[in-house]
Image (cartoon, rainbow, N blue to C red; front, side, top):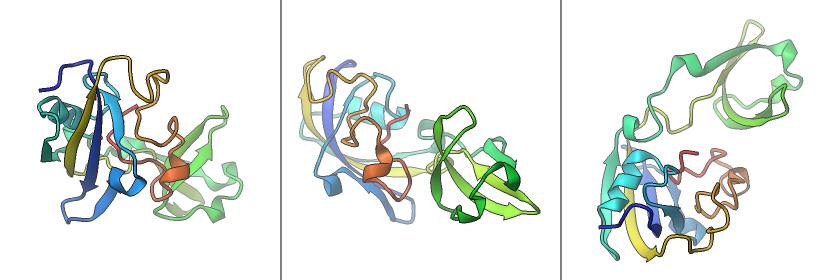
Length: 180
């Protein structure tokens, strides 16, 4: 068992119920590094790793309430087209990064354009979906050590401080389980 507060490195493969793979640390050639119990991972993933032994491989299924939450209708925003220059270029059904009026960049999915309105989904792309992860506990490091020890806000997934769009163009997020 891994003690809470321990920094770990794991490899993982994430799949949907139909077997479709949505992410894999093996593909990026880097382990996912995080602090067990640190609050940066989805609950189900963190809890599973906490119960593992070094070198162990385990397959787990995570329900939405222990993952990215249920999909919520109130996270869909109806925006007048005239408030979004270039709205006609938004790809329907694909995650995109947009800039808010406050200058913050956020990830949304353009659901549809209808009657002069754009419907933007602010739910995480994995919200509402049960997930299956194959996890391999590769290394347990002392607290305060590891490649990301100086970057407390970085989940350690290898995306370089949450610049997810550069590594994971399919969704704007890596699906690594990071919940920050």
